[in-house]
Length: 357
Image (cartoon, rainbow, N blue to C red; front, side, top):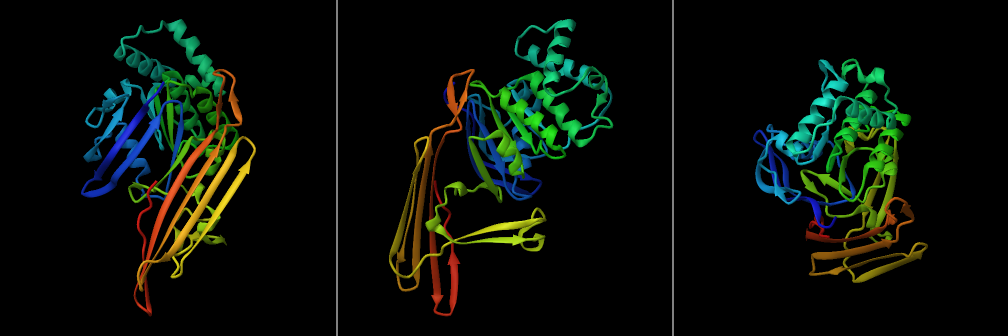
């Protein structure tokens, strides 16, 4: 299918009196996996809650367009019936309700809302068993109360089963890799990749590169302070980098609580007070071509600039045998601009202008 499945336009969202999302723009076409990364407090989980209709957050301006329909003001059940599935970071326990009964209830409600015939008991049992087998879930697990006494990995695997049973158009996974061991992560990621087709897409929120390696997302968006970082870090060329620092050991004081094992800190080059520039070209297999360059120089006695850009293009090297198409291709670009202003000879004040791409 052509066009975008999801369009987020200039979205501003408040939690109480505090603005969390500050003009977010994001689009997700059909048949793609997109990932969102960023530091704690950047608005990743707020975004997922707003998309699913959580009324604890107030949209002050902007629009969310899903399947060409404005869902900004819709209720959670209305959004769900349109085909949006939300896998929560911390799934709720529901005592007294078995997994099978829960699956039957939500599956029937979804089909009725979309004018589809409800499956009979035997057909539904067969349908659920087929999905459960993909995740290594047996009948005994299906008889357990929903998430009661489950480990973190069991809860995430159960949510993935709900995803397989409902077969939504857009799936939002909020840190679904949290609490999963290596084997469970393989099962969950394989289930997601196996589901992706021309009629759906996935939005994955994560802190960990390991899940991205398994899912091979079409795009990775970096969220910082409620906005999408416009610079594609994968496209920064060597001509833009001043130094790369590999800092071992806990670095939470300087870089936040997620930096418990160390940090790789990339410092981009500052503008210079003399004119200069660099260009880098790279070619390789699968029609790989990369070009990157930078131009720097003075604007006035106290102000200098640096403009950098990069383009990365490559054909896919993995073939989808079912559809006969190649996947994992790349076509990315990035542009950035820096201004350096020194009000006095002894006082260097750096003013960084946002990049655009």
